[in-house]
Length: 150
Image 1 (cartoon, rainbow, N blue to C red):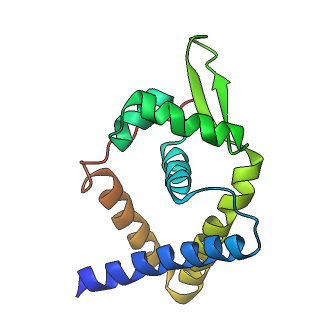
Image 2: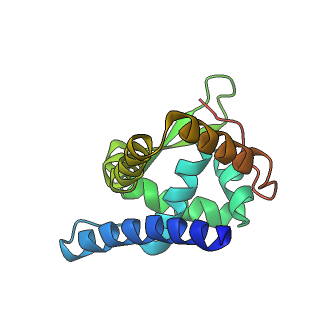
């Protein structure tokens, strides 16, 4: 039963995001391809990765990652920021243009979190927070997150 409940919540978050993305296609606002949208989701999840870190986590070649990133840069969704410590290294950072686009997903997440805080007692919310932290840090070892950059 737990697996079904988790799957349902995860699926509803995905469907909400897809609904918002597709509504932008109808209004001709979206300029990201599906693959580019997934790339941007990966960059957001990783913080400010280098191209090499992005490629490694996504299990694609560095040249393939560079090609995808360059397309996102041309469209104005990503910028390269030079490292303060190693001037040869660049970090990928979403632009304001993408953050405005991304807010369609994050706003709904925040709405659901606010509803959780109203619906459940504080101790249940704290327990859910603890459980999600354990899930993210201990129970998903296959997904290695690089240290946050910048």
